[in-house]
Length: 112
Length: 113
Image (cartoon, rainbow over all chains, first blue to last red; front, side, top):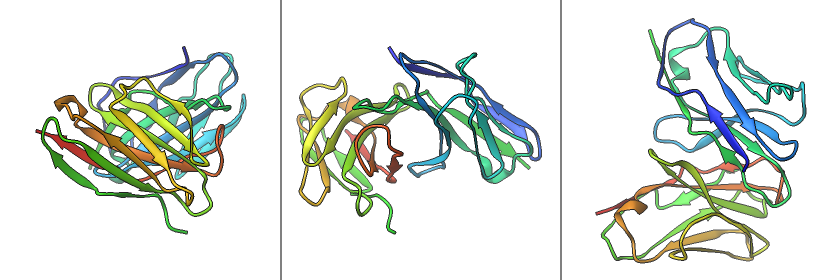
C-alpha cells in the first residue's frame, strides 16, 4: 500500500545549524507531497507542498524538492531557530477519495 | 477567515462510556476528515465526510462513527470507550473531496480512564 517513511527522531540541533529530515514514499500513482508541522499542544499546520516531480516547496526558510527518481521529499532549512522546535510530518495525497497518508513524524529540538 | 475549530479541547471519560466530538470547518469548506493521533501509531485516518455523506473510511472498528450536517459541521462518536482510545483526535477541512489541501484544527485530547 501507499506509505511514507521518515527518519527516526528525535533530532537535536544547536541554533543556526543546518537541518535535514529525510522522507521517502511508496505510492501506486503520482502523489502530491506535503510537510506538516505540529507545535506543542497544537494541531497540524501545512508547512509546504509540492504537487509534481521537480517542484520545490518552500516556506519560512524550509524547502523540500519532489524527487520522483528517488521517491523522496526531504525537508531542509539552512539555519534553525529555537522556535522551529516541533514535530514534522511528511505526507502524501493521491487524490480521488484517498486520504492523506502520514509518516510517523520526526521531533526536532533546537537548543540555544 | 476563521480556522477549523474543535470542541471540546480536552475530555476525560471512563471505560465503557461514549463520547461525541465536534468539528466546525473553515467557512466554504465542504469536506471534513478525522484522524486519530497516538504516540505508538502516529496519525491514522478515521473517515471523511463530504456533503453529509461518508466518502472514505479507515480501518477502525464500528464503535467509531461520524456524521456531517448540512452546514458542513461534523461530529464523531466513539461508543464503549476503551483505554486504547485515548488519543488526540484531529479534524481537517478542505474545499472539496480528494486531492485538496487540508487544514487542521487544534484537536480534542481524549483521555479514557
